[in-house]
Length: 77
Image (cartoon, rainbow, N blue to C red; front, side):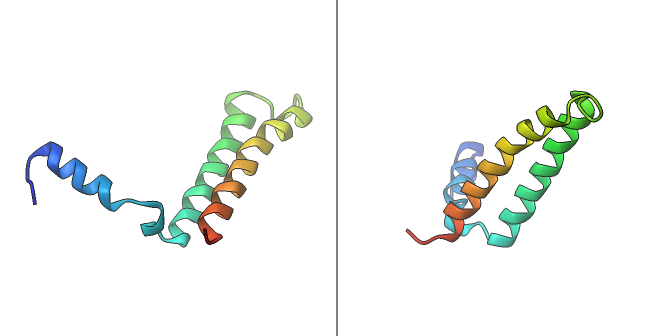
Protein backbone atom coordinates (compact mmCIF):
# COMPACT_ATOMS: atom_id res chain seq x y z
CA UNK A 1 0.00 0.00 0.00
CA UNK A 2 1.28 3.43 -0.93
CA UNK A 3 1.60 5.64 2.16
CA UNK A 4 1.85 8.95 0.34
CA UNK A 5 -1.11 11.30 0.78
CA UNK A 6 -2.17 10.86 -2.83
CA UNK A 7 -1.88 7.08 -2.65
CA UNK A 8 -3.85 6.97 0.58
CA UNK A 9 -6.58 9.17 -0.89
CA UNK A 10 -6.77 6.97 -3.98
CA UNK A 11 -6.92 3.85 -1.83
CA UNK A 12 -9.79 5.21 0.28
CA UNK A 13 -11.76 6.46 -2.71
CA UNK A 14 -11.32 3.13 -4.49
CA UNK A 15 -12.95 1.33 -1.56
CA UNK A 16 -16.03 3.59 -1.34
CA UNK A 17 -18.23 2.30 -4.08
CA UNK A 18 -22.02 2.40 -4.00
CA UNK A 19 -22.15 -1.35 -3.36
CA UNK A 20 -19.91 -1.04 -0.29
CA UNK A 21 -22.12 1.49 1.48
CA UNK A 22 -24.56 -0.31 3.76
CA UNK A 23 -28.23 0.42 3.20
CA UNK A 24 -28.78 1.50 6.79
CA UNK A 25 -26.02 4.10 6.54
CA UNK A 26 -27.52 5.36 3.28
CA UNK A 27 -30.95 5.71 4.90
CA UNK A 28 -29.46 7.60 7.85
CA UNK A 29 -27.57 10.00 5.59
CA UNK A 30 -30.65 10.62 3.45
CA UNK A 31 -32.82 11.21 6.53
CA UNK A 32 -30.33 13.72 7.94
CA UNK A 33 -30.18 15.42 4.55
CA UNK A 34 -33.96 15.77 4.43
CA UNK A 35 -34.03 17.09 8.00
CA UNK A 36 -31.38 19.68 7.18
CA UNK A 37 -33.25 20.66 4.02
CA UNK A 38 -36.41 21.20 6.05
CA UNK A 39 -34.59 23.36 8.58
CA UNK A 40 -32.98 25.46 5.85
CA UNK A 41 -36.26 25.96 3.98
CA UNK A 42 -38.34 26.80 7.04
CA UNK A 43 -35.90 28.74 9.21
CA UNK A 44 -33.01 30.07 7.12
CA UNK A 45 -35.21 31.04 4.17
CA UNK A 46 -37.93 32.23 6.54
CA UNK A 47 -40.79 30.29 4.98
CA UNK A 48 -42.16 28.78 8.20
CA UNK A 49 -45.21 31.05 8.50
CA UNK A 50 -45.13 33.00 5.26
CA UNK A 51 -45.61 30.61 2.39
CA UNK A 52 -46.33 27.00 3.32
CA UNK A 53 -47.07 26.02 -0.30
CA UNK A 54 -43.69 27.30 -1.48
CA UNK A 55 -41.99 25.53 1.43
CA UNK A 56 -43.73 22.28 0.50
CA UNK A 57 -42.72 22.68 -3.15
CA UNK A 58 -39.09 23.34 -2.22
CA UNK A 59 -39.04 20.35 0.12
CA UNK A 60 -40.48 18.08 -2.58
CA UNK A 61 -37.28 18.25 -4.66
CA UNK A 62 -34.95 16.68 -2.08
CA UNK A 63 -37.59 14.10 -1.17
CA UNK A 64 -37.87 13.10 -4.83
CA UNK A 65 -34.11 12.79 -5.28
CA UNK A 66 -33.72 10.90 -1.98
CA UNK A 67 -36.36 8.41 -3.16
CA UNK A 68 -34.54 7.98 -6.48
CA UNK A 69 -31.20 7.44 -4.73
CA UNK A 70 -32.70 4.93 -2.31
CA UNK A 71 -34.47 3.06 -5.13
CA UNK A 72 -31.25 2.92 -7.13
CA UNK A 73 -29.36 1.55 -4.12
CA UNK A 74 -31.98 -1.09 -3.30
CA UNK A 75 -33.01 -2.33 -6.75
CA UNK A 76 -30.68 -4.75 -8.47
CA UNK A 77 -29.15 -3.88 -11.79
